[in-house]
Amino acid sequence: MTSKKRKHIEKHETGEQGDKSGKPQREQSRKAKKHYSQIIFRDWCKKCGICSAFCPKNVIGQNEEGGPVFERPEDCIGCRFCELHCPDFAITIQESDNDSGRGK
Ligand code: SF4
Ligand code: SF4
Image (cartoon, rainbow, N blue to C red; front, top):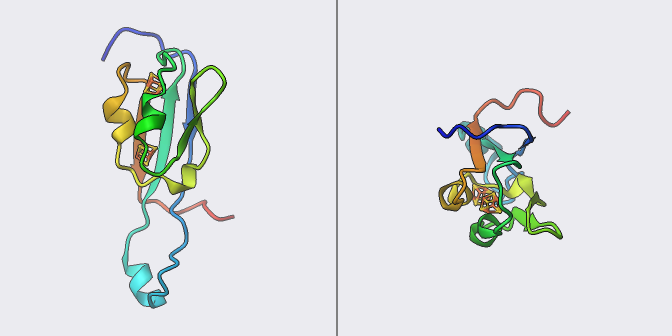
């Protein structure tokens, strides 16, 4: 961990999309739902656009300055390409199996 300050942090909660496969409900419920949150440390981000370029699900777009914008957070599959390729460790993906409090 670096000594950089964490002044401006954003957390984007996400959820898995509904199953459109037509599988039986019992089979769907056996799978643990995984949810992902994208956390961005704005003070560390140099707006290079790498995270946006590497995201395979087009979750991350860019604002006018080139900084990341989470346009489709519900589509995040937790691959962590964005986290792994960020040169400034400015983006983190968190996984949670807890489905409570969602969909309300
Ligand atoms: S974890 Fe993968 S799908 Fe999710 S925002 Fe990062 S690159 Fe995109
Ligand atoms: S890869 Fe890292 S530094 Fe570059 S825009 Fe994304 S979060 Fe910012």
